[in-house]
Image 1 (cartoon, helix red, strand yellow):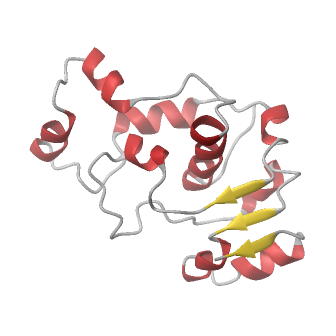
Image 2: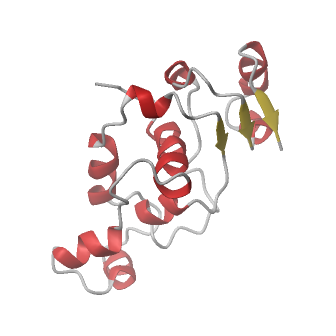
Length: 145
């Protein structure tokens, strides 16, 4: 079983494999999941329960438990850090991108991606992890804006 240390880093990998490459499935839809549990208006549910600035427990549980086989991890040659990711909207459907909810806290999970060559948005990681550009460079990973 592959274990990620940083949930937000795992979300970047899920974005790439599930929503971009479509090699990891089934594609998770929080709206469908919540509808199956009796929640018809997801945004109203989030606002009524003051969950605007959190990852919904249902999404967190799904993505934390999601197994990503090593052979799929080996296909990841590029990651992108961007506030507009689908996976973020599945976790926090009314998130406005104005906080650190999805900031990367550790790059330890780079070890799980043996073929990663490019990290778009990697230079932006420096405001989250000051040593990020150096860590990426030391691994031969190109950090792009």
